[in-house]
Image (cartoon, rainbow, N blue to C red):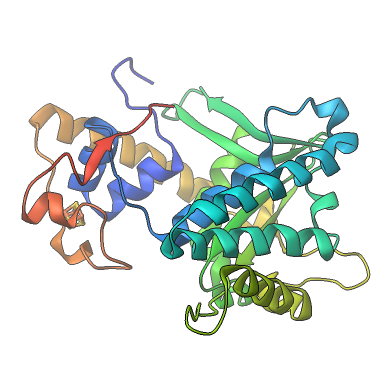
Length: 298
Ligand code: SF4
């Protein structure tokens, strides 16, 4: 490890491997797009509600009902104030959270046995510095939970998903040699359309909630009606740790090289793959203040 080596995180590595210019925008200029997709807003919302960092861990169990009540009231206020466009994604977010409560899923994630958003920093000879957060670290040290909120979760029902997620989870395994396995928790975002001519936003919310509670396995991969748990287990042995370590080192060295040469190539083949890049307008038109803002450094 040398002093000027970059600190690697999974999102930073993902950006760099997609396109060096993208990494430059997100990790050198520290920019982010102001307007986020509904899927991202919902994911952030669900993550933050379930994380509830400000709650004392020892009191978490007792306070859970209060938290959810506050959430319900807060969201109701938001829903009454927002324009339809904002109200639609908020309704979906609220339906996911309320659906998880109704299906008794939440109590298996938010309780005193888990520490949410556990920060880690790996400083180890032979590795670049790696920084990140574990969604839900179990106090036994044996495993962690990883939330994934997405429009499509069918890939998570097939084995191929493990290949795609092993780099991210692999970093978490590297952070703690005691971890034996993790549980990926894929949550599907409702795709129901809001019909403003035929229903109120409250009716739309109720329709989303009913669909979630009627078809839990459609929204929560492998939901078990008896245990009220869901998700997919990924064991440490399934991660190709050597390959990941090589990838982290290669990424850190390549970032250093780009920084030294002050050259961040544009990988134009990545602009629309897998989805449109957030920085397409920055590359094609230029950076404007109405589209991009400084993001917070972690
Ligand atoms: S728009 Fe294309 S070239 Fe520009 S940062 Fe994104 S992927 Fe790279």
